[in-house]
Image (cartoon, rainbow, N blue to C red; front, top):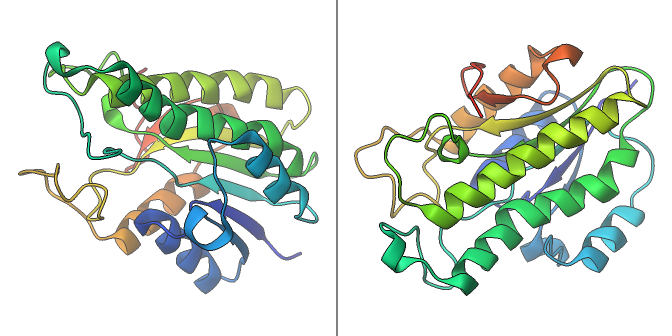
Length: 222
């Protein structure tokens, strides 16, 4: 049976690398993005219409969307930099968007046999691992996404016993998204990040569903 994968955000650095690696490994890949397909993950009608046009089931649904900077506004260094609209924009892209994809895409996972829904989160979304503060809107949006992943995994398990639903931290990947903010952090190329993340998914079991893993396959605390 052909392994079918659906990549949301497939035109970005990580998303395109994930799609390419899956294709190299023999997976039948359906790739959707805003720039190529007009998919606006913050608009429910756009998400529903895009997913309604698809046929069949997917063993892997991978949401590779996300952003650090919107409309010229990057992560806040202090509370005085916080703005309501900038925070709402971060939530729209980094939490609401993937949540809408979950709402309309999880039905595309097969009820029998192994399957996986994964979404890119970020270690800075961990509350327990927060030692530096700052980056309020991005941190909070990713923390909210983690909660959505954890909750959706509980519901999914009721109907899809072998399904896995997880949040993933890819590390600092050398893409346009991170170029301004990587600083002295070591970065990896998108194709290496894709290999790392897919290797993590290959090693997960159904009882890992609802958790948060980094690119090495280590659990990240909430």
